[in-house]
Image (tube, rainbow, N blue to C red; front, side, top):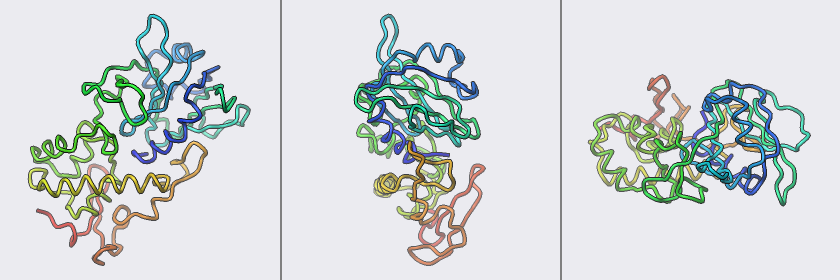
Length: 301
């Protein structure tokens, strides 16, 4: 599943092309791409056509494009969740259909001209929706790239991520210290901290030398601050390398794959030597997935 770096790469690529662009037409080719928009395709189209896109914003793994306000309506945004295999691609207006294309939006940008935004999704777990924007409880911007203190209702329950300027380190440390569940499970709780999926949790815990099954109450304040620093370093490096792509599904808006997979130290390296001490990386089942860690560098406390 795409994680924060992969979604941020998409957001960053979309921003210059969609900000201040007008939506001319919307083609819904498969209504399965509207599972988060329960009012159906006709309503989805009518709420988008003729409106302007104001920005490209992200919180955790959710992406949204704020829409120009309409009289007598609350602020709204086009919200995207990529699911397992969703892609948002920028194409020429007359470009051929993409494989697994579900929705195509035709836009006109004042500087870049006509473009098409394509939502493609092989497994159909991703979705687009038009969603009302709600005020943020802390009065800070809704997410990374968001111009206003507003967040879509479908994203309001998602916590801020460690790269968000409004993320509160001390609140995170205090919350973890109150929890007796495993630290990796805590990192994957999107209501506490967002954007850290299985890959980056393994990488951050390896870098911080913390065993994934260590209880939150057993992790010291200094270790948690070190973990946060490593989380940020891992996410920033993944961003710089375009995200982690194991197959052709995880791509940027131009269809290019990221190459952070070549920089992984723990995830997916079960049985291979730890880059730090040479001990074989251990792979264990975890929440229908896997955990990868070094049994020597990451001793359980």
